[in-house]
Every structure is written in structure tokens, then in C-alpha cells.
Image (cartoon, rainbow, N blue to C red; front, side):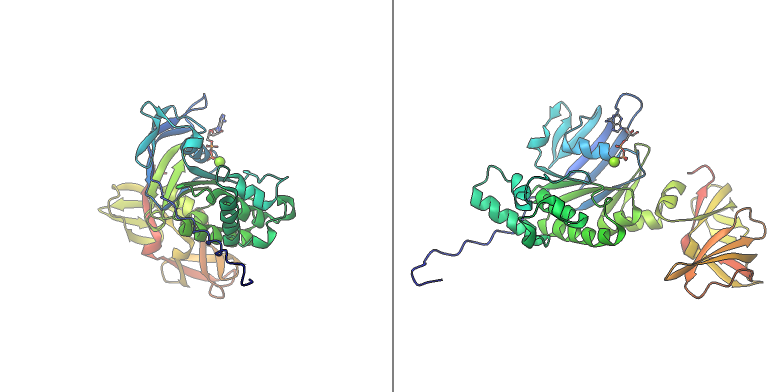
Length: 365
Ligand code: ADP
Ligand code: MG
């Protein structure tokens, strides 16, 4: 800078501070013509929080996201944004008026435009210098400053997804809707892009809804999870709540591999071939004991139920042992820290850890 150059430095662009928006679904149902794609769905997302819509393929997750974005009009129910009805109740606010950002797995960047042009695209209508400095700040935030002149085809999958994130947050949406945004990435890349995305989300302060079929991804990213099943909400709550206290066998199966064995409940206790556990609130009668693989203890023969190890698989930090137990039709799968599972052929005794065991009514799936 020379003595004559007295122009003040350009002010640094402010970090994307947004007014996070609340989102609420109330009794929302939608049909594409045959049956309900989503049925009577009610949940709400508090401003600034991250909610995961979790469930297997076809359960209605993308439909809910499209309804929130306004590209689909629900047949029944009310959707509100920031406390104001935007669908239903006689209201309909078109997508472009909702102030919502979208990021989809196949929401491709424009291939013929540079990254900088892609990110400024959503900032049309702003003064050019402002749009450019905002776009550059967002690209810097996702570590792509040095790539701003490149075209999407010159970037890796992870970089493209980071660029898509920069583009989605640049206009400072109060709500960001993301549909399986990481499913096109390989596992290791997914972890880092996921963590970066969460950091950007937290920094921007936007409310976010993330669609995923991966329970681990939902637990890693979300403050709350809405677990869907066949168009309906199966359970909603904090990640730990869904994992520790699944309301159904379906929810338990969704979050981890489980061993299911028959048991009989009487006066709040379940009796099975592996012993007794507490079953508070479960009706008397035949029921199902759901045991997580790390809830099975393997000891010497004589302790608990008699069993034999038939297979052992090394999985890195843990080992998986397959055990045939006297009196049970199906073999059990146990997880132990690596090096602790007995060798195949060993005679063992199997007991339960109550904390990793859940009891469900026999028809409760
Ligand atoms: P998910 O995202 O959980 O996989 P979707 O919301 O895409 O589920 O789909 C829910 C149900 O609605 C599925 O049975 C699907 O086949 C159906 N569906 C989704 N989109 C359409 C459409 N445009 N036309 C007809 N049926 C659709
Ligand atoms: Mg989908």
C-alpha cells in the first residue's frame, strides 16, 4: 500500500448469521395417487437445531422434505415455518418465498460454471461486490478458496459436496433441508464432510433437517431424530433416547443388530433360556427379549446357559462370536473386545447384561 492509497480496506464479510426458522408439521398426509406416502406426520424442529428424518428407503423422508420446501403440496395437514402456516389451513407459500436452502445428493452444481459462479448464483439481486465477497467467505469456510475458478468436474466428490454446502448456506437461509447429502461419498470421506457440514451448520446458526437412512449418521449429526416407518412417525426423541429406550422392536432393530429370543413375562420379570431380566411395564405373557451383541457375556461353562462357540470373526476393535446355546433355535451373536472371545469349539456359559437387554410384547414389532 502506498501513501497515496487512502481507500479503507474492504470490510470483511460478516459470518453468515441467520435468523433460524422453526419448522412444524401437524397431521400431514400425502398421497401420489395410491395409498399414503406419508400419513398423519407431526413433528417440530426448534430454531437452530438439527433434526434427522431417519428410515429405510420408501418410508416417505424425501416426500416430507419436498413438502417442507414447498415443491409438493400435502393432501392434508398444516406445515408452518417460523410459526406461520405455509401449507394447509388455506395457505400456500411458494418455494421461492420460503427462505429455505436445499442440498440434495443429486442437487448437482452447474457443470459449466466455476465454483465461484455456482455459489454467487444464489446471491443474484445483491450488489456484485457483496455477492462475490460473501461467496468467497463461504468457499473459504469449506476449505475451497484455492479452487474458486475450477469447474465442478475438476473436483473430487467430497469437494463437490462441500461446494454444494457453500452454495446452500450463502444466501443465509433460516432453514436448510438436506436429502441424503452424503450418500454419494465413500465412507472415510463421508465422515470428514459430515463433520465439516455440522461445523458450518452450527456456525451459520440455521435450523436443519437432514434425511438419512443411516442410524449412525443420524446420531452423529442430529439433536433429535424422527424415525419413520411406512409413511408414519415410529418414534421421535434425542438420539440417546431412541437408542436406549426404543419404543418398539422395529426401533430397536433399526439402531443396532440384536439377538431376539423368546421369553415369558410375569409380574414385571422376563424369564428366558439365558436367565431373568426386569421387564417393567410389559404385559404378562409370551414376549421377545432383544439383546444387543455386546450385552451377551461369555464365561466358563457352568455360568448361565450352556453354549458352544461355532465361529469367531475379527472386526478390528472387536470380535464377533457366534454361539449355539442349548434350548435356543437360532445361534446368538456376541461382540467382545478383540482378543477376548473364546476360540471356535470352546464350551462356554452365556449370561445377560440387563442394561443392553430390552423386552417387547411378542406382537410389538
Ligand atoms: P424415501 O425418501 O424415504 O425413500 P419417498 O418420500 O421418496 O421415500 O417415497 C415415499 C413413497 O412415495 C414411496 O412409496 C415412493 O414410491 C412414493 N413416491 C415418491 N415420489 C413419488 C412420485 N413422484 N410419484 C409417485 N410415487 C412417489
Ligand atoms: Mg429419498
